[in-house]
Image (cartoon, rainbow, N blue to C red; front, side, top):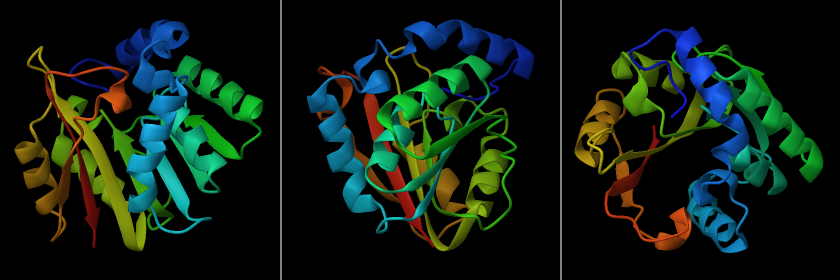
Length: 204
C-alpha cells in the first residue's frame, strides 16, 4: 500500500522509506522472477490501450510495474508518498533504460492536471485511503475521455483490505462499468495465496 492511511503523511512516508530497501524481496513487488514478471505482463497487456498510451501509476512504490509498462512502450509517470521508494524507482528505470518518470506525492491528491492520462493504474492503495471515495474520484479525474482505470486490490488474511464487492461498489458510484478479474494465479504472487485478490477494470 502506498497511501496515507489513518495516520499522518509524514508517518506513512517514513514507514515506507524504511521499507524501500527490502520491498522488492516480495516476488510481486520486485518482479525479479521472470515467471512472475511474465504473469503481470500477461495480465495487464490485454487491458491496456495500444502504445504509446500514457499511464499514471499511483502509489508506484519501487516502480516495478511502471518499468514493466515503460519497457513495453507506454509513457509512464509514477507517484509515491515515499521519497526513498521514488529514488529506488528512478534507479530501476535508469538501469532498465526505459522512459518512466517518478515523483513524490500523496496518492489522495495526485499532482497532475485533469484529463492527462489514458490509464490510471493503482495497486494496493485504495484500501488505505482515509476517504476512499474522494481518492477514487481524484484518480478518475486524471483520465482523458475513454480512459481506463485498473485497480488492483485485495482482502488479505489479516483482515485488512477491501473485498471485490466493496471496491466494485466504490467504482460504480462514478462509472457505469466495473469488471472484476480474480487474481488467484500463483505466478502473479510467486506462490499460492489464501486470500482475495482481484483487479477492477473500468472504462467510461
